[in-house]
Image (cartoon, rainbow, N blue to C red; front, side, top):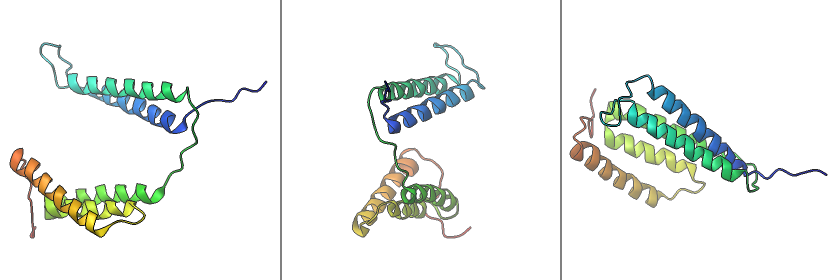
Amino acid sequence: MRRTIKLDYADAIGGVLLIVGGIWFALYAMNYDMGTARRMGPAYFPFGIGCLVALFGLGCLLGALRRAGAMPVIEWRPFFAICGAVLAFTLVIERFGLIPATIALVLISALADEKPSATVTIILAAALCLVGVGIFSWGLGIPMPILRWTN
């Protein structure tokens, strides 16, 4: 008698990635001083977060073993659009400032959608520019240019 395997592939893959990422993060944090619960060192919090991420990944993986699911299909356009948007943000922010980098991020990431709405994209870009400037420049006082037109 042949037994079929019940596996939710999407959750199993996600669980394994969370486990691997959490373990890597926790192990990397151990390069720093751990400290104690009373006097935490720089590794204490990242180590704890890495362990929690790995535990959540284990929970996803164990849940995936109890139900069936189809193998996920990779959609390449959204993948490349999001990767390109993050790359554009990192290249633009230092040279032109936070607002142009945020606009580039939103415009390029909108290409992940099959039919991006120009109105929604413009509103989202404006809102994220306001939020970014409000939180990072004014609220936290992070020294980054908002707009830079010269080198």
